[in-house]
Image (cartoon, rainbow, N blue to C red; front, top):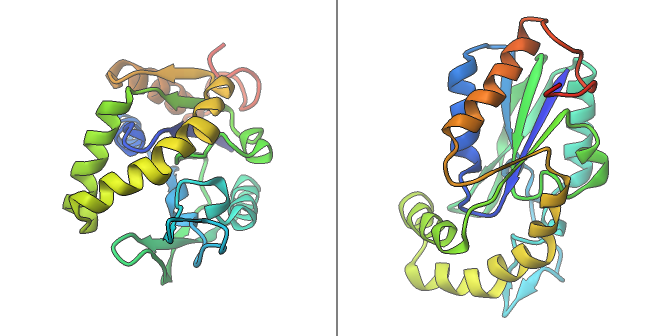
Length: 212
């Protein structure tokens, strides 16, 4: 099992980057996991800022379930991953079956935050994009896809997104094997080439130096 972790701030283009890699690989044994799927069904009471839930804190995620699923997938099993609905900020009763598979790409803001999960990855990627670009992308996405108002997006950005990024997320960049900027085409092609090697059973085994 070959695991790739893709981290970066909100609006840095993690999902887009992951889909670029998937498009270049075109192999059914490669699957994509979204850390957003593992938001807790309800957030702890301490995760509130000015009465609003803080979805940008590490404690907002169901780490126990995510660790269990990654361990089982790595062991060649199938898991039922949660489905999170952003418009209602809730975990749906439906699930999505994933696995067994040969390679997993997992993207999310805190993909590299937990040491146990971080140590499972054969390649760790961090998307480093300037804050103004990330904010504009987030604003467009949340209005278009999640039914948010402009005022609520700006308030959430200053109350939780920005401070949580600086306190918890930005420090995880130090763990990345590959730091990618706003231009992701070349990096996605390089990563896709490595994933294709693994999918075809070529090159080194996972864990023995992903780019050596």
